[in-house]
Image (cartoon, rainbow, N blue to C red; front, side):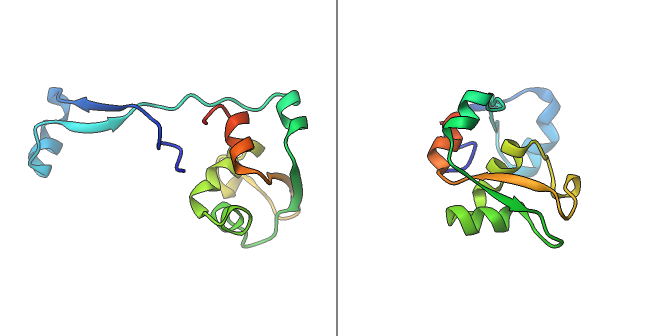
Length: 112
């Protein structure tokens, strides 16, 4: 389940997007509302089963998500849970936690 799967869809017909509407030959542009997520508190973190992982040179969030969840689209769960917005923020040797149950992790992040 991608993070925008349950997001509310908004139709935008304001003048600012006229160039895009003309380019796409549509009368309105579809946008998704911004999901509101939170960092898990200590109680939520304690209730999740995680595994530790030492970041190595060449690691990518999407590869870890594929290995642990069989779905690379959940890369952002690992990034958000650990507070790293991109791979550029992690150095080889850094320790991260990977939630093992994706449903529980989504609930802890306030997405499910």
